[in-house]
Amino acid sequence: MPLSEVTGEDLSALLSKADRRTLAAVVTHLSGDPNAIPDLADRDHIERKAAEVLPPFINGERQPPVPDDELLQAAMDLAVGAPVPAEYRTYVREQTGIGPVEPLEPIDAPADFKILVVGAGATGIVVARRIQERGINNFTVIEANPSPGGAWWTNTYPGCRVDTPSLLYSFSFHQDPGWPEHFSPQPALLSYLREVVQESGFADKIMVNTEVRTLTWDEDAALWRVGFRHPDGTTGTTEANVVILAPGLLRVPKYPAIPGQDTFAGLSWHSARWNHSVDLRGLRVAVIGTGASAQQIVPAIAPIAERVIVYQRSPQWLLTHEKYGRKLTGQERELYDRIPMYREWNRFSESWRFGDGTTPFVTVDPDWDKPGSISKENDRLRTQLLKYIEEQVGDLPDLMKLVTPDYPPFTKRMLIDNGWYRALRRENVRLNTSRIEEITPTGVKTVDGADVVDVIVYATGFQADHYLLPMQVTGAGGVDVTARLDADPKAYLGLALEDCPNLFLTPGPTAYLGHAGNAMFFAECHARYITECLRLMVEKQVRWMAPRREAIDTYTESVRTALANSVWNQKGVDSWFKGDRQEIVTIAANTVIGFWSQYRGVDEDAYVWGR
Ligand code: NAP
Image (cartoon, rainbow, N blue to C red; front, top):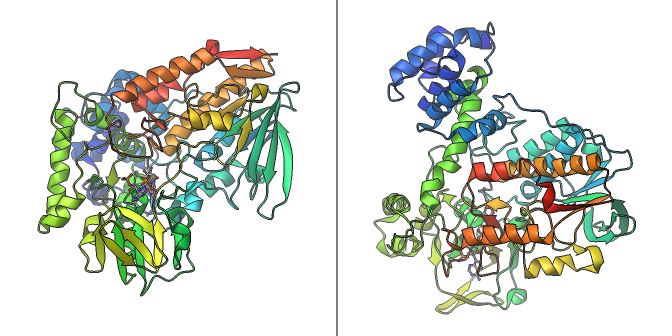
């Protein structure tokens, strides 16, 4: 049905399926009246008002206005059902596309100013796109895999999907390619990223099947000398004035420190290296780990394999979401496609729900001393999550005990229930919480016994805190940057490394958030900041820029202080936020708006600018 025909009863039927808050924001925005919706609880009024206001926008007689601050603020408050601080206004204009979006200043770089982007995952893609948008065409993207796509190319395990709403887990400049599901499965995400590359027009600048192995700063030439390798063993070199490393945080598989892995006579693989040639029907499968990957794998393979034994070191807190794993209904798709500004306002309300709306749950109350929670709000959430566990497995008290965490919600990354508890209830699935002693030729030996299995799946995560693996980076003065970063992961704003002029690592240490935001958003923030640095280099006509050590130390000190007292820093609780260490290194304790603001402009005094 053409857009203009959604009127009368069709429109009323559609509006009855709309999210109330989102619709209230849309009506406010399109009516131009900040007081159009006096009562957010009055759904009938919101729908009536929408039926009155929307038709000229639906049939194309009127275009959505660019809201002034008062109108925007009123719509923002309605979209989340609470007052939103004014500092979010520019963020909302940009991240939803409601606008206006201030264009970034073009960069008039000399033709021989060459940029190398390492990695064509979501981050490398948006970095390349921003470089190009700002007028620089002399850039190459090097990608180790045979295709762009990063984590969404490498992770193909059964059940693989995103656990952030797709409308949010997308770039602000391309929010909805027609997402098939609310939380898209891996193939949709991979094709989305490929689509962005095609649309952006730099597919021919991506060198696939090329893995960067060495980067050496040539002080005299003020260039990075880069060595790479192809899968057939052939090698090559290139050079660049500026290198932007976007290799991916969750990239290098981490195998557990369990002896005997090489002795196993069956087949084994890591979750991020799924072996699709093996049919699991009739096989006994051990899955080691209970993180985000295992949570998706186990429910997907349990109906196929003969037996699945899940080895849990610690249980996880699981949220539930009624749209998770569900396709968009026809009406939900129509709301996005036919109601002007519905998608945009929905993106903002989701960004709040999956963003700073969670702040009360992660803010530590220093006077709170109830074990297992960090504040009243966090405890309230804990109670809700416990109730959910009880609903799922309350009739199996032994299992319930095993799957109930004793640490506060949000200490590890929160997950969404993907049928995990239902899978654990199955006859052919067993949860084994005994400590694994060793892998034997026949299976897995724990302190309490041995299981004979045909396949072992290591869903044991990634070496998130070893940023540069397997690249050997040699910085100014011959410093072994790879080793130094492993020993003490720090970088100015989490992006600029000591002794590494003209080099950015995105994300580097503490350049992510653990509870809010998402990889696409973080990448956009970083890309903006990095291209601002490029603009300044060109404007100042310098050959190099490098972060001052004091700037790195001051930044690191403040981030580490905030992290030390955060929900993520619970003694004895491991997560990829800590990696192999006792302290948090991969994320920062910040709000989404704080994160976004941090990368808006460049403090020139934090850098040395060299001619
Ligand atoms: P992960 O969250 O780091 O989980 C690794 C799991 O392996 C943990 O359960 C860990 O136990 C366990 N483990 C490690 N060593 C072990 C040992 N020796 N014995 C038993 N268990 C051991 O890794 P992941 O599941 O691959 O997920 C990593 C991140 O990737 C996620 O947090 C998320 O950011 C991203 N991801 C996202 C999605 C999605 O969007 N849906 C899907 C997959 C991954 P402990 O908990 O005790 O440390």
